Length: 205
Image (cartoon, rainbow, N blue to C red; front, side, top):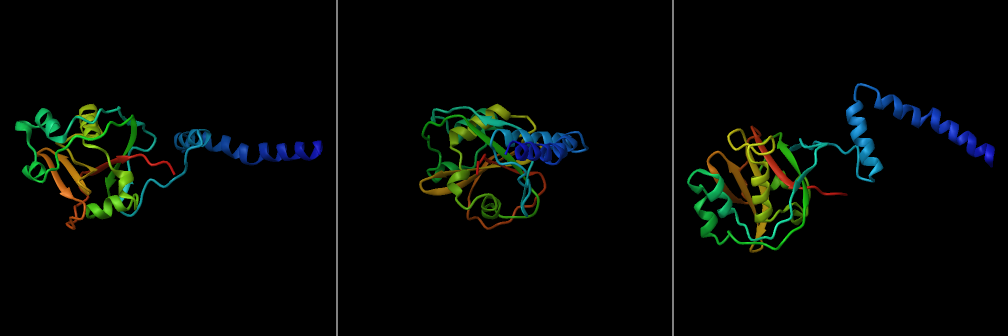
C-alpha cells in the first residue's frame, strides 16, 4: 500500500503538478494564477467571460457595494450627481422612486455589451431568474457614489445600466451624460453595443 501511494504521489508531481508549475510560469501566468487562487478558495474557476451578448470586463477584480440602510433613492442620487438633478420624469410619475430594505455588503461584476440586444436579452443571457440580478435603489446609488468617474462608471464615456424591482416590475435604470433614465425590462428596442455596460450582483454557482 505504501509503495502504491508513493508511486501515485510521484505520478502526480511529475504530471498535473508539474504542468501547473509550467503554466504558472508561462505566457498566461497571470490568468493561471488568478484561476488557481479561485480554485483554492473553492470558487468557480475557468468560467468563460463571454456569451453571445455580453463580455465580463471585471474578471479578476473585486468590486463591492457597501452595506446600505435602504433609505436612499435614485431621485436623491440624481439630484446630487447630475446637472440640475436630471432624471427621467416618468421615474417619479410611475411611482418608481421608493426606498428599499437594508442590505449587506455585496460584490458585483461589470459586463460590456458585445452585440446589439434588448434589455431582456442582455440580462437574460446571464441568468433566467432575474431576481438574482437585481440591486436596490440604495445599492445602485452607493455604486454611483463609490465609483463615480472611475473606470467602472464614467457617464461621459459610456452608458451604464442596473436592474431593480419595484411594485412587482423589473426596471432598468440607465445612467449616462444626460442623466438618469428608466425602462421596463420588456422594452423590446435593441441597443447598439457601442460603450454600453451593465452592473449586476456576482452570482456564485
